[in-house]
Image (cartoon, rainbow, N blue to C red; front, top):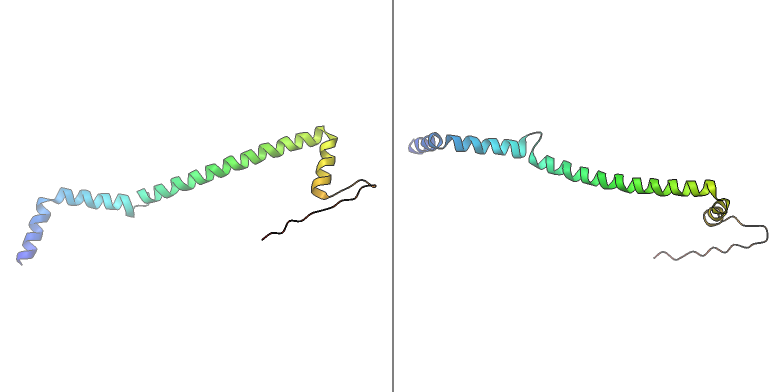
Length: 101
């Protein structure tokens, strides 16, 4: 009974500190908007922003190539030769493959 009385006296003396600690634990770890989840959300936002930048640069590059293809017939020939291995009637094409080890 003496231990129970000493615990009760400790709680009565430090009730505001205990309530503040319980509140901090609930807000910091257990709540739906906890600090841990907010940190995870910030990481995900940063990751998605880098992806947006990557896709934006790809879009700019593709738009640039499309404009070049529309304006320059030599660019169409270059792409046809390199990408689709097309050739003129009097040409031979040699394709070299690298060993992937």
